Length: 105
Image 1: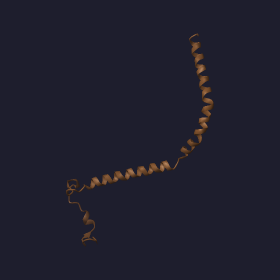
Image 2: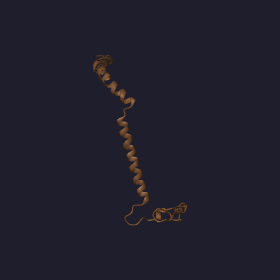
Image 3: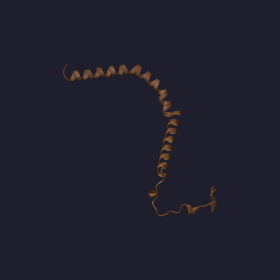
Image 4: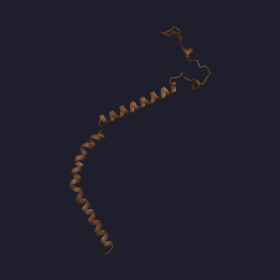
């Protein structure tokens, strides 16, 4: 068995023996935070930190999809600028002709 550095008391498996009481019934001294609360706060903080790190990495490292979007955006814009107006005009004209034929105008 090892001894504790501070007081020479023995440490080991005997230190972890249950007293038969539920841990929830043990109240911390005044001004102390219960261990379960501390663990929950620490766990939540690390989860938040991991999420922030992952988000930072995601933003810092562009994906293949991001690169493709950036490359295609000007090409698509140019194509739409050249072709969208004539396509819309043609489709509107066809719809006008279809409606006027149906109503005999």
